[in-house]
Amino acid sequence: MSTIEARQFTQKTVKAFEPDIALINKRAKFLACSAADVIHEMCRELRKQVYLQELGESFDLACSNGEQIAAFEEEHKLWDCALSDGLNSAD
Image 1 (cartoon, rainbow, N blue to C red):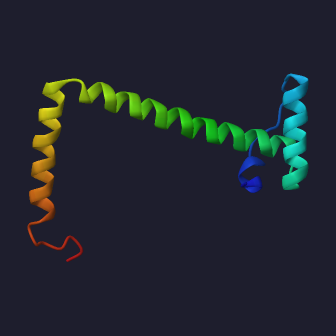
Image 2: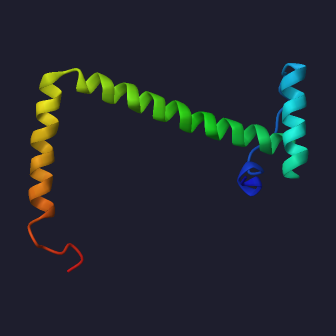
């Protein structure tokens, strides 16, 4: 857990249900950090989870559209050619 990153922000009071507060406090004690650090990390993980879920849903939607699949495959072929042209981009 990145406690340094979490402390860059101003802390505010948050209302929560008692079982959730107990869980957060137990986790903070186990990790030897503050409850705010635990909440920050939980929110960071939730952001990642939501992003990946939305990305997957967008991919599924794109895959259900034959026109978009064809456009993707055409662009993919172009990039395959560019990557296999033998040129070194570092030169």
